[in-house]
Length: 341
Image (cartoon, rainbow, N blue to C red; front, side, top):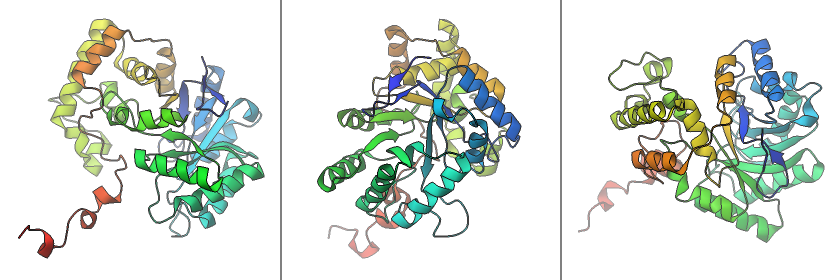
């Protein structure tokens, strides 16, 4: 595997990162199988692992797998989301951050975390409160670098300014959603991250399974995610139509769709690593098999013709959009104030 520098941290990481969300109770409950997947990834040269405290027992699986191998791995985890029913065990306050990091260190069986990430923006906590706590963790040696996930461009800029004014550690990375079908971050997030020298770890490069070819236009989808949760993007006709065009392209150029999708996100100069989140050994082997795929300008131009740069087709339901979009009360005036007269 080649290596890329993680922003301006000086840390070297592989372009493919192993996402561990599905290794454990949320995906593959066979912990020995999860350990085997991590070991196979390490043996293949992947040295960048990403998880989060809210991914069930994923951190524990990772910790078990890294016994005797911790020094050769760049280890990333995240905080913010609820880990149990206690309202105090979530968010980005100093109170929770100081507890959350100790919990993750125990689960991961390590003395330090290479990259500690704010999983989502916390509108109820001042960003300088969060940065102050994370700065203390870096100075204590428990964390090497700090990052964010699903931040908007304005939030990234605000955090950088706060760090400069207050003398805090800077967020060094951002982790956004990015795939052939989800290209909105090309407009603002990637350019802003590049401007501030941030590394970018992109998640869901296979668009939540869409770019495996599993979901096809005109076919009934019996997958549990669409049946049980009613996610709209699994039935989005525009998204399914784009997938059909991409399948045709992959067949024409002789590159499997999954390999085409991973190579696409890695071709962007603002992307440091793409997170592959296998649930099975077969899925990991498929990712490894496509590690050497390099897309020509002609193929990238043809992808642009299917999904224009900077645009998304039927964005995934689970993508964070912020309270000002999700909460109707924040985007609707009181009824009496809605008219011009």
